[in-house]
Length: 155
Image (cartoon, rainbow, N blue to C red; front, side, top):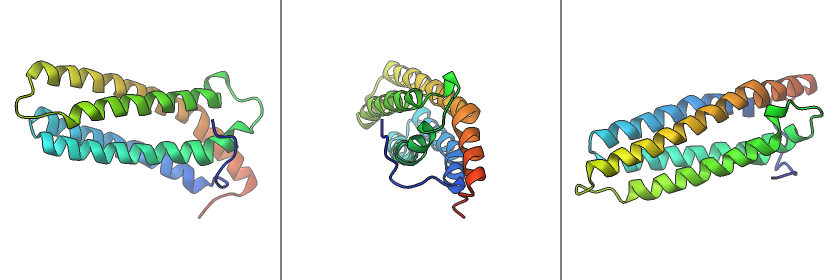
């Protein structure tokens, strides 16, 4: 957990977080399309881009949004900051594990190995969806209200 923000959050930060959810979904889909098409070089390049954007997304939340969010009294139980930090760790671990597998793909990779990879990726997608729902129900609306009350637009 990072109790000290690198800077004060803005409404623009929240818009970035919201817009990145769709970008991340599109990047992941592009990776999976290349994967099932057997284009492992493109699958890796697309996954690299997905992972890079996801790391930046998590850094913004961990370094800017969550420290300020943590200061808000009486947060809902499902929106406690420690849940977000914990989920970020799980997400980063899963992304790293999958990344290692994708890097090792080649023309000789068995179909069974691809199926196992897709199943791992499905579990990651579920984790990401759950995390995004939690953000949409707690972090984003609560931070929007806080920032609007303090006039921190960032525009």
